[in-house]
Length: 99
Image (tube, rainbow, N blue to C red; front, side, top):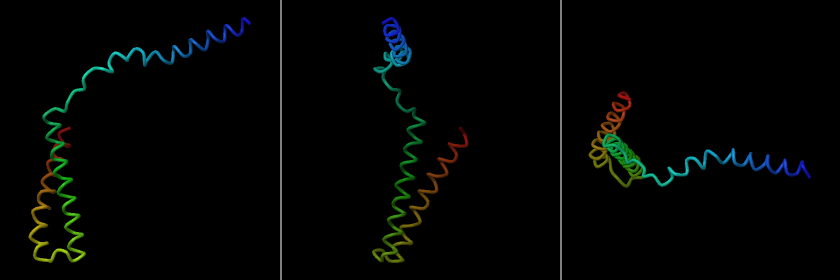
């Protein structure tokens, strides 16, 4: 009987010890999250611009290969998209070099 009580006390202590970190930090669950800084918002916008340009380039390449877009239209459209993607990549690389 004594060993059963001792085992129950030991189990309760182990559960309490394991749960302590969660109990102590429970008051921070309702704290508001910090929003992105203006610099982070700019980086996110540039990354999204890069992704849009690369997606458009991929779609343009596909349409050109399948014959939906002729060579003249392809040459007209591909240049600005490549420049946009390259500019965004350059800005991202410059930001990464600063960090």
